[in-house]
Length: 308
Length: 257
Image 1: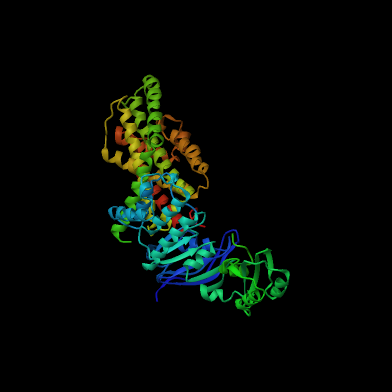
Image 2: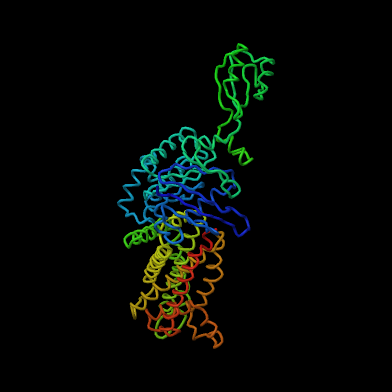
């Protein structure tokens, strides 16, 4: 299968001496929905900016759909659409002009660009705002504007740098649906996010980057098998007494309140054992849930930092 | 990108630049018209009426080409410097940098915007001059050639300045401390032949002198410097600034980390 993105030994050292990326190898297959995870300052944005041509790499090789960024810059760039983390449009320009001008920079004729802009602005519910200067848009609308702008030249690879940061739950879910639809239609998508639920929900494969290095890479399913311990919270109808908690100590059980306790299962234990002990004690379980998102737990374990 | 796509990208940048300066015409077109109008009244009419004709031309007729050129220089420079730095400041320059638009097309688009504003303001200033004096054109080719080349030179200079500028103040330093003195000392209000020999020689190090002189030659048929020398200097400056801009865009100085 054709590689949408191929990075080979990519490194970046800034003039200040900061090593932002160190020999990063990464491959994203065509049609994938790929997640790039990492704490703040891990190198995610540097990586995206190098791919976009906004930051100069120190060494390494980048190919976008087989086009080398050093030798076939124009072809490589034509395949790429980027939604950056921070707003980077002219606040005095009208919404429609931002989209149409971006298309123009890719050589799309104005008449065709106006048609594409109409379709995208309607899809992203910005059509009513088309004649407004972009500064009057809400934060969520500005994010959608950047998505529309990145899509106007019909890229094969879309990179989104934390597109749902600061976006309310409803809008986030509608963005997920929109991105999933694009992916289903064949677009390769690379997403960086702090919301690990988002990565688990959307991405089949992920890479975790920390201190400029890829520390884990693979399918979400495979990565989760590396999680050696998972913490759960159980709500019960009956009080969990001290004796039962004592028996559950092998699962590091701790009382939260009279009808709630948390416990941990490692990869040699099974949940059925907990249920059996509770059943013997005559305690009925109303609900049970993971204390944290599983990917988040793995992420914290790997990076030793709490995601923001 | 093929030829049509390149042309589309070029027109998009040019159109965007024109829409920008026309949208804020009170800031971009009007000030030069008002300022130069005052120069016409004060220097041309009040003071000029007391000055003897220069080579058969009134003082007002003498200063009009220089004042038009002054407006062209400041507006061509300011348009590109403020627009390009504004795009860097708001980061919408990234829209262009991530696109496959070749660097020379980006430069051409911005420069065309600067040239069009320079010429438009120049035409307005010239129009105002017609309220004060009669003007004849000695050679249209020279007038248009110097107008175009001068606005290209200062548009390229504005782009070069903006690429390196880190704050808005940096885009004001050159117009205030370099362009204004060079323009005022570039023979707009006087003929360098009226200066002592030493200052005539010093004045010849000022490139604006050659532009004003050549442009005035197009109107009045009189020049401080040989018109071919002026033309050669303008072409040289154009090529040097073009190459300098192409180089900084290729290397990403002031544009990429």
